[in-house]
Amino acid sequence: MNRFIYSALLYLLLPLLILYLAIRGFKSADYRSRWSERFSLVSLKKSDLLIHSVSMGETLAAIPLIKQIQQAYPELSITVTTTSPTGSAEVLKAFGASVQHCYLPFDLSVCVQRFLKQVSPKQIIIMETELWPNLVHHASRSGIKLMLANARLSEKSAEKYRKQARLSIPMLQRLDMIAAQSQQAAERFISLGVKAEKVHVTGSLKFDLTIAKEKVDLAKSLRLDWQRVASPIWVAGSVHPGEFEAMLKAHQRLLMEKPDALLIIVPRHPEQFNAAAQKVLDAGFNLSRRSLNDTVTPETQVLLGDTMGELLTFYGAADQAFVGGTLIDNGGHNPLEPAALGLPVYVGPQHWDFAEITGLLKQAGALKVIDSADTLAERLIANFDDKASYQLASEAGLKVVDDNRGSLKHQFELTKRLIAFE
Image 1 (spheres, rainbow, N blue to C red):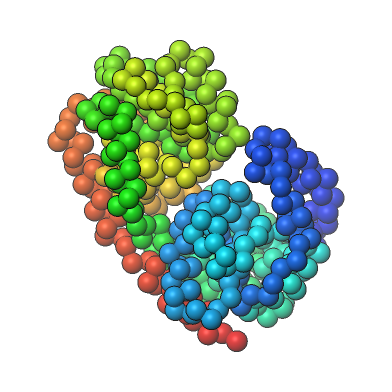
Image 2 (spheres, rainbow, N blue to C red; image 1 turned 30 degrees about the vertical axis):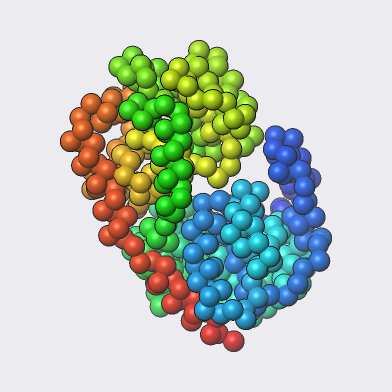
């Protein structure tokens, strides 16, 4: 499939795009507004630099880079786009009115061209893997320089690109710079036809995360408020449908050994909050909901983290963590945040989106790959019982994060080169 056929299919699928927004809007109020931005039907100001940061995870990784750009180039006008309400919320919280913010429009040629004409950036930085053929094509044709920052490319994703070579290869070759998270990712980009001189191994911005002391202090005070200072606490973070049952089954097993244990379960998507609450109640657990400010008592068995932006705090209040999207065919989420807080980490087998990071943590002894609720329960119990083993895993995670810092500096140097292009 080439770009012409891709574009024609997108126009044919336009009713389905509208239906998609309607369904998401029905499930989550945050998707009911700002539809005009999805089709570039809003008035936007011109900006020197456009940064597309996708959703919450990519935005959190991009924030330190954007702040460094603002500090070094105070005269530079910046537009930051996302595709999700969670990413949008993080942009507004971090930058307020200091950047122009909107959703990136759907990759329909007419929408993309209208958007680029309005914003008229000189450079575009795209975070991680959010590559859209029409966006890249029309930006490149307009003379806009393109950088793929913090780029990851799993073997599974590379194979998908190979299968759609007529669409994906020209798109990749139009990129002016790629800051790859790992040597493996760099080699995959080169194998897909990107010139080697365009690809730079910089490491992952996610290793440069800074956890504010205020968050750590808040986490400790929460645990104190819950009267669970000495109780075993674990977090199931970014959990998807298809994983809730396994988390609850593992917790049932843990409670047989540790009756005062607390599970904090945090669904990945807000539209799953109520469904998750019902599953917890149906399983017979004593439930508290964070969004309702329910009191967590010594009798509470499960706390539902049904709020936005608190997952890091929950990790800080816990002893161990499972990272979701890995027991289903999803690709997983970032395991570094719990590791950076000294928690032993568990993931399922489907963690290809973070294969390199997971591999580093696993090799160091900070992370275990589990394939079932029973295996997860066994590992949780083992680490709660064996303090020496727990300490080794905790220290290993902290060391992996510390040893791999420095990506921000390297990616900022590439960004300076990009901005110097005229």
